[in-house]
Image (cartoon, rainbow, N blue to C red):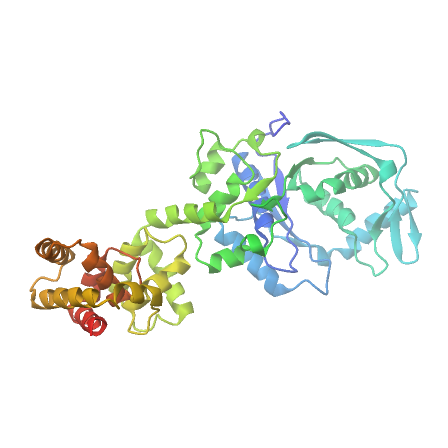
Length: 436
């Protein structure tokens, strides 16, 4: 941030103002996150204001999802949210006050604010520094529309003043609204808050973030198996630099080390691959017991969770958590553990199971493990290495056909650990079938 004014402790009041006309956008989630961290770091108050003035498009289901997603991200609020749909009379009264004072006029049922001419409005933006606007470039502003609903810029000011908001942190797309709002504050005899405008999140190609860059709503990332800690961590890096090339940090750590002067003034690019990497780091560090409820949910959604024991799920989670970038990858990676109806890579079958030499190797390895008394991963690996040495072949010539035979895949957890979890009877059955 370019503004050196450090906010006073406990005096901060910030707000996040979602509109319940759709799911929580990833950019809006970042805005909420930075307002929340700003408040928590400086010992202030974080508020919610529901911008539901569009009565036809606003839906309770979207509001419920937005509030659920905020809580999922770890963002809580300090006071009961206010709803703009319940404050139309307040906005009308404020507009009438300005018309009576000669600062506005009526056009039918609409209330219009008279824009003063030839004035320069200077904003000391917390992120961009000094920004200037000329009122000659701004037309008269609607306060109340002819249908009785308030215009965005006007009701924002009335509500922010009512909530005693001291700092407004929002996206760059609102920068052009700032001079209009400052004039409303002035006309109503109110002190304007400090403003900070974060550059928008763009796709990796520099274009506006859209579905072709990945999900655009928090709900999508939640459904795809991203952890809230990872998504929050990544969103932090899209607007702030903690220094020391540090990338992995918890929300609590971020609150402690946050410095508003280090918020970025350049556009952030959303890199899905980096988010996937970060999510994988968080998954790998979690205990399997912590991941278990989330894994169960993935199985439930896929329709494969019926009758699966927790013991098996914990073993599989142990094996696969270091290999997953998202929890949604768990089911397709482990489907061969939940019955014989699993996906098979036909190219892998062609390459590793069709050649006569591969079938012969697979038959012999099956014979050996069927006779073995010990079916531990270590014992199975020892048998494989011994056979490779005896036959003067590479261990991979045994490993690859065996993996495809028992899982239908060329990748996954360690082969011998997989075999141990599947159990001797199932492994032998699948190997015999593949070698026939």
